[in-house]
Length: 232
Image 1 (tube, rainbow, N blue to C red):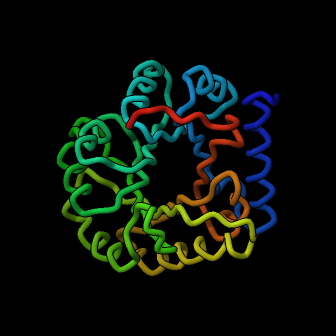
Image 2: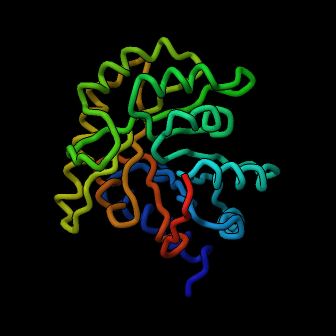
């Protein structure tokens, strides 16, 4: 079985090749290693291979990892659904949140973000394809939240995220990513340039890079098949 180091190198090469193929500047697509359900030992192997951004979805599991790895200069991203009783833990322990889908979450995270920490970097999760099972907000709702960001000084809106329905067809994969990029272009301003497009995973990485992704969220291609814990 390939090592985590070799898998990481392969993913980095995929990103570099996609950047070249679609005329993106080298290094403009960041890699977020999705470490949810993975043991600390796997994360340490990734760190040794030069990875420092990690994505988590389950609060208690993530807090345990953040504590165990607190001596390392790692960047922690919350990418899962946000439960109301978990916002304080997110606000106090994470550097990024990708999955904002309500004004209530904005208020809670802003009020609970410690003043001793830098503003929490966030993305709004956009529901592009109207899948009922998916979290996220509609594009028209996103416009209202962007307008309201001046009410949340402890938050820093960086851009948009989407999790589209899976497809094996390349053109079909590109469509929702193109829609997200176009929405970002519409919403962006000098005050809020919204430079982050968090889109693309293991199976649609190339399509995401083709349409302007600036951060791909990769788990399986780095760590292998996932084992889901019974927790939230």
